[in-house]
Amino acid sequence: MRWIVFVVGFFFSVGVVGCGGSGDNSNTNSNTNSTASKDYSTTLKTKSEAYVVSYGDIKDSDGKAYEKIPFNKIFSMTLTVKSGGGEAAALGEAPAVEAMMPEHQHGMNTKPVVESDSPGTYKVTGMLFHMPGLWTLTVTFPGQGGASESVTFNVMQEAS
Ligand SMILES: [Cu+2]
Image 1 (cartoon, helix red, strand yellow):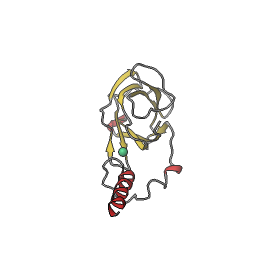
Image 2: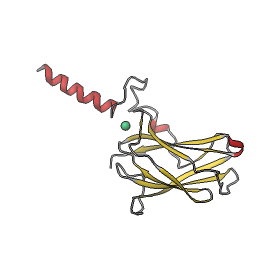
Image 3: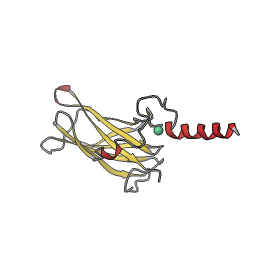
């Protein structure tokens, strides 16, 4: 009967660790802690407060709108960057977009493409959140004077 305990234990630990994270990174209670108090805003100021960044307009690859980020489906989204005063901020280059699952220490299996749409508006295609759980979406760009500006959005992805 010992093998049953082993098999159950194996599946349990896979479930906790997720998809191949090391599992020893100081967040063994991560399934229950802190996520309730996180900020899931879709609009954030950069630390310098010089820029306000929003994401939205989630669509599938045919351009059909999604209500929220879909689970395990390719999606696109629009990023808008405004100055602290609320005007569209025309950046010198398109922002970099990176999505991660911090509790599993991995990113997406796709590489998003960021294209300029109009000043301060960027279309991001090729996004894919392939696992449920907490994702972070970090947008980084050079601001005035070349200082690096960034925001990190929290996204709780449901398996649906
Ligand atoms: Cu994961």
